[in-house]
Image (cartoon, rainbow, N blue to C red; front, side, top):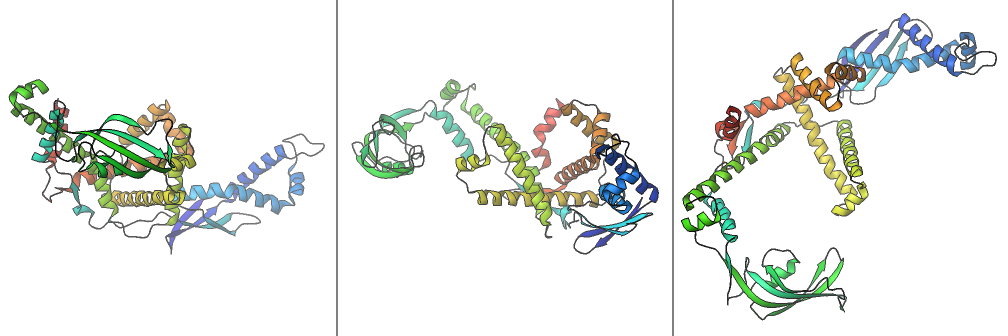
Length: 446
């Protein structure tokens, strides 16, 4: 078999394929063997039905040849795709140009292929990361959280404000009928103003309230799906008084002997948290920056395929939890059309990233060594409890080895890009890679 590929308009390729007569004869013999086993003819055992009888049953030699071509052409097409290294993304339109009746067969297949997108400016990408600097406000906030654990509630005479702790009696009724089961009643309930843990209207009512005030208002509780009338008695208003930051307090509240040591440790922990957050966002933000370079229109076939895979994966995960997609949408309060639209946006971004990484592989001539491929196959083998040769054989048989190689090359391209983008903080100042990966380097050294 011989195959050539020529580009066509509309991101398509025309494959021209020539099949030798001997290969056609082999395909015809295969069909005859199958039909000889399947056809039931009186006087002949299965597998022993003569060719002339099968031809007669099929409607003649031409009909039998047509059946053989119908069965064999998909395999010949697949071989042509592999030989020409074409990357189709849709079903082909196949037209037999010669050999319908006898001799060698020629056919043409027009198919849409994966496009090559431009990624102008990828060598100068700038990625903005969360700042690595720790602010005084962050340290103070962390210090206040620790102080709150040993704070003291003190009653105040002023109106309530956010952060105050109020003791209240709260009563709720539905449809002008008292709540018999008491689910909406609570006495001596300690509530922090601004926490929003009951209903939003409660915080609005309590702000500015004083001891002895009686508040009445209506709200809607989603779980009940009906309006509720509330009556609240404010019994006292207290504020949390935090201890002073002293060496004595620091030694009691922490493992450190002085307040300076405690503050230094909190600062260092915050800095490490910033570094981890920046490291975690680096890959995603780099991918987002690369996707923004892709301006070409993306074939709908690729987006729909990615969307179908995402819905399939979601259904599989939900099924493992004993939940259907409808139940999931109901629990999250989302409309199916709106949800699918959101998934489609993610699918489009994923396809753009895939195409951009393929272009980056070509631009930077990123290759995969045999050792790197073997490492990937070994990793897959560990999950499948198979050795490398078995994994390779299975992938080759399924025609997936090239896809694995491509995925690994794209992963290498992504690592290359992460290593080569310019890094800045949210303030626009350059971020040092030494600072970003200092902890990792220390761990590697240890």
